[in-house]
Amino acid sequence: MKPTSYVKISGGPEIAVYDIGGSGPDLLLCHATGLCGPTLGPLATLLLVRFHCVILDSRTHGRSSAPPDGSFHWSGFGSDILAVARALDLRKPVGFGHSCGGASLLLAEEEEPGTFAQLFCYEPVIYPSDDPPPPLPGNKMAEAALHRRETFGSFEEAYSNFAGKEPFAGFSEEALRAYVENGFVPDGAGVRLACDRVHESEIYINGASHDAFRNLARVRCPVELACGTEDPFLGPDTQRMIRERLNGSGQAARLQVFEGFGHFGPLAHPDAVAGWILDTAITG
Picture 1 (tube, helix red, strand yellow):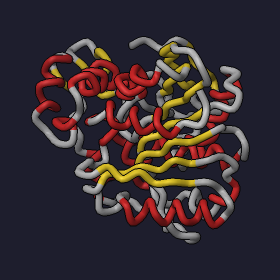
Picture 2 (cartoon, one colour; picture 1 turned 120 degrees about the vertical axis):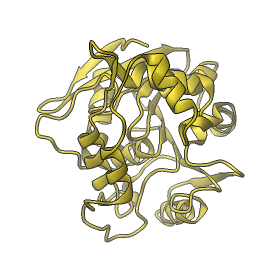
Picture 3 (tube, rainbow, N blue to C red; picture 1 turned 30 degrees about the vertical axis):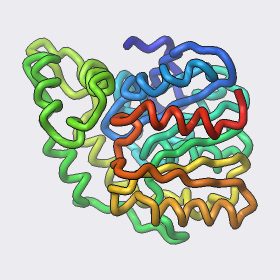
């Protein structure tokens, strides 16, 4: 999948954007750490019956560049989303975000309340406390990112590798193909990860330290939360705390729990996640 445009962030990275088409309200889709926008293509395709779908590659992922200052505090992801929405003239868009993408959408709405008409967040990475921890070097996910295999002899070799490893083995075939074909780039001797391992590790280091939970009262749109039952950290207990904080601030928030789904539900079960969005959307 080739980007349809790029948005240059003032003083920041260049963000790749994929306009998938469709008619109806604008829907901006944001992916998880270490992946890329096109992995949400199978989900977006199912939503074209009701929305005009636009996907982005987050900073340093896919075809987007890294921030010049090397900062991977998560507030930057939110600011990038706002810049993309302005550049594309997306007025009161709907947002869907998975994992980091969900947290990034909430951070964007908190930075500029009233930007979105409705948000759909599948297991947004939010530490449910008014006092989030500082950046955590050496955490499990950050260390794992540093040891990811960077290169393969071909796209097919990469696909065969990931098709036999969790969590990728659980992706739909279309989502896994999209990850391999867009999350890697040719490098002359084969293919190489588009997202630098050190950058991915920095994102995980900063993953719990943002203040999205503290500022949920700034959200000015309905929020639909979803999770599976299989993730002990981002599953129902955490999402209920986010829901209750939103509802306690006067915002309409609901939670959909998908029995048996894991953290990568939108990539493993795009049909079910699309059904949830279509059933609960208030526009379109």
